[in-house]
Amino acid sequence: MIVAKLATMHAREPALTHDDLARITCRTLVMIADDDEVRLEHAVDLYRSLPDAELAVVPGTSHGLLVEKPELCNTVITEFFTKDPIQTFAPIRRAAPPVTDRLPRLARKKITGLPAGFRFTTYGTISASLLIVSGADVKTVQARLRHASVKTTLDTYGHIWPDRDESARAAVDAVITARQAEQRRNSTTASL
Image (cartoon, rainbow, N blue to C red; front, side, top):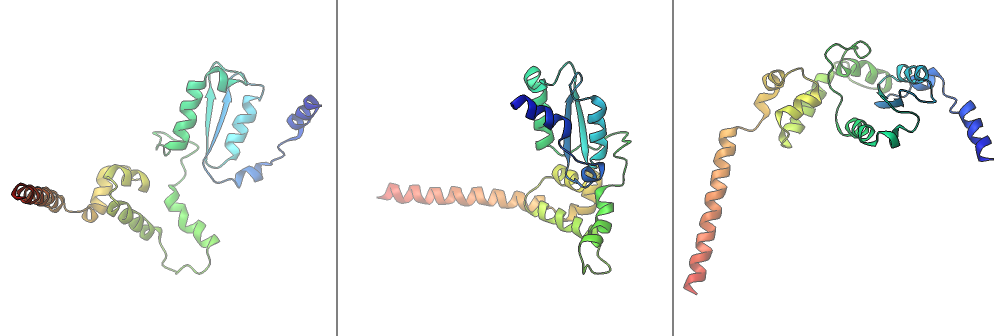
């Protein structure tokens, strides 16, 4: 009974079309073995149908790739979930304009009532400002805004970062104030 259900499932499910897959907009990892019962062509077709997919072919494995090479699979899966995608050197499939260039067009289609002058550069400025005042370092802000270099981030948003001289003065002042308070407590305790 179970074997028959599995055979039916393998033959008929999932019944997703290319259009169904094209509507999945989240980042997706397609992982397959190089000697899998699922044909490599099928995995490549799935990868190409998903707009924001990444493909991992695990060498020297079969359909049991998670058992056969657990460390490698775990590394690929963990990095996928915990790290942002890197900007590749010579993209072919991902050579589309940056997401920030497409966001205004997408937003206009989905959100009614946006002002005529609505621009996502405003969104970028707000995002950068929030990250910076929350204590994010320049590399984090660069990655979130997808700037090609830290120089671009600093040239554009450097004025938002707290003045380092003021931060240093405040840190020294806090240490001196704490030290003076400790000395007062010690002198009060000694006089008792």
